[in-house]
Structures are given as C-alpha cells and as structure tokens.
Image 1 (tube, helix red, strand yellow):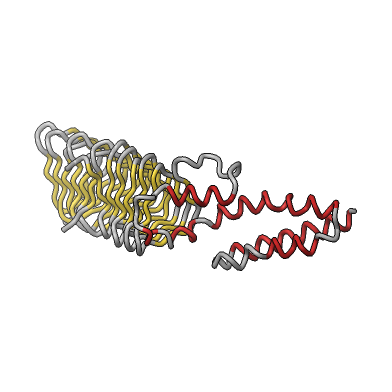
Image 2: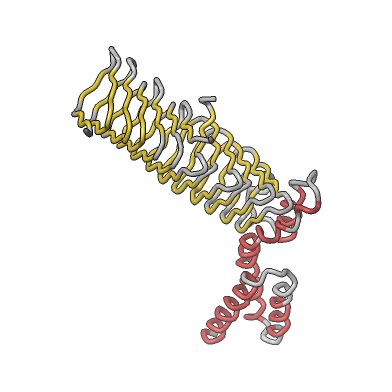
Length: 204
Length: 104
C-alpha cells in the first residue's frame, strides 16, 4: 500500500515528483514527474507536467511530454497535448492526442522517407483494433513537418535548373496539403516554400 | 474517502494543496496544506511548512506546523520547527525543538 503513491482528487501538487515507485494521479499536478514505475492518470486528473516513467496509463488530461520506457496507453477519455515517446504507444478509441509520437523501431524519422515512417508507426500497434488509427493523424503533424523540410530542398533544386518546371513543382507541393485533413500544418508548408523560392529568384 | 498518499521512496519537491487526508511515507520538500488530517509515518521525511486540521507525526519533520485542532508527536517523531495548534501531545521519546503556541 505504501508503495503506491496517490495524488488525491482534490490535491494540487506544484513541483517535482520523483522516486522509484508507482504513482496514481487523481488530482492536479503541475511541474515535473519522473518516477521509475507505473503512472496512472485517472479520469478527472489534470496534469500540466512532463512525465517520465516506466509505463503510463492515461484516462485524464495531460499537457506535457511523455517519455516512457515501456508503454503509453491512452484510454477512452484521455486528452494529451504533448510529445509521446515510448516502446509501445496504444491509443484507444475515444482518446485525444496532439503531438509527436515515437515508438520503437523508428529511431531516425528524418532519415526515413515519409511513407515509411507513416507505415511503420502504423504497424507498431498492429495488434490493436483499426479504430485506433483515427487518432493517429492527429499525432502526425510533426512527422509531416520533418519530411517537409526534406521536400523543400528537393523542390528548390530543380527550380534553379529548370524554371519551366516551377509551376509543376508548385502543384506537386500543393497536392499533399489538401489530401490530409489537417488544416493547421498544411498551409504552413507552402507558405514557407513560397517565401524561400521568392528569395532564391531574386538572388538568381 | 480517497486520500493523497506519498509512498515510500517517492520525493515531492514543491507544493501540495488539498482538501483531503495526506499520508506521507516518503519525502516531501516545500509546503503541505490540507483542511484534513496529515500523517507523517515512520521513516518519512518532511521538510515543509505544514498546515492541517490535525497532524500525526511519527517520522521526521523540519518546518513550521499549524494545525487547527491537534498535533500528536509519536515516540519515533522528530520535529524541528514551531508548532501552533489548539492541542498537542508529545509521546515519550519524541524529539522536538521549537516553540509551541497553543491557541486558547
């Protein structure tokens, strides 16, 4: 009993929680949580803290990054805004996630092509129901941003050699943006490219 | 009623504010405020100002205590700090250094 620490439902903790123990959060925690055990964030809990743990089960709300050795399980009702790093990430139907996700098997997302990262992250929780896939797009904005950086030089290189292909390149660039239904990240990518191209034109 | 438990081995550095019982087996530094009961168990280390209705101390506490109703120092208790409360008991063997202010 003494091994499990509980932050009760009316409790507010502001600061740092550390130790080689399990932790159950029912109340409000702000700051930093770094335990070498299992963390459970209960349904009514509000956590504004980065969490490091062996595993995390979330049914409540977290604003902060989750760095976990084994598994992150976002259950129904979970609301997480932050990056998730773990060997295994489980997102159940009804869970909400906004942030970057990295599971085992994709150590260098920048080196891997766009499609491969997407397929691998999708494969990781293969055993899970397909219903878990919908939250995944919400988790991918950042992976999209990284390939976007790779895409930009690719688009710029031909523009220097073949000016005629520019319109074609633009349409290619614009294509992926309407395809994913993520409004916020898509406009950012073309906007950046237009700006960079403009500067290149002037210089040349 | 669910309560807040700071288990063995855990360290909290910061502030705890709650309206329920708090049981400390581990380490707490900072501030502890509750409207209910606080028990600092044997082996626990609290370096904090504690505000509560009642306090049971069996571990080590460094800091000022303000308890509305009562403070009980067990024989294993070690307290360094001032106590302000309505009633206080100090068991034989308890170590205590500080002022006591009993509200009349």
